[in-house]
Length: 111
Length: 117
Image 1 (cartoon, rainbow over the protein chains, first blue to last red):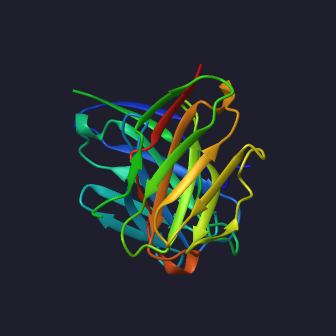
Image 2 (tube, each protein chain N blue to C red):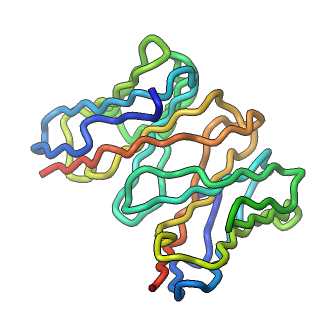
């Protein structure tokens, strides 16, 4: 079973609007990571938030983490057509050593 | 190298043939991971290496799948007697070290799109 589950599965917005997607996970984590994937090929690491952090910013990206609810959110502000991609959250569950990915959120930004 | 390099980028093979997929990680990255992604799906973990050893190969779907890593660098994923259900994008990633405590993101290659006909 997947450690991370993204919600919604798909999102369609107009350029300039904000896009928010959520991720829930099941076990304790040390950190949670968000990745972007364009055109079904390689993933790009966007941001990593540690379990003792509640919010982190990187450019137009804002990530929150609520360890009590085992959930995270990714906000993309002032979206652009180039933000069209699939976004995945990923965690290393328990004492493991491998990232486990959710099913992703497909974001379409219409110009 | 500057990034994670995978080859070939695309591979079409006949059912029953063997294929080898190659991954060249970032120089100095000790951890290397293989994932598989079917069309429109999430990433499925296959195997990870720390150095040349594979502490976790729990994701390999069957004994037709094997992987090795030599010199702490290049890794090869081999699929024997390919089946149509093996068709997917095979992604390789590397990180400085393994382990959740390390707090390092992964760097992914562009993947190999395997099509079994």
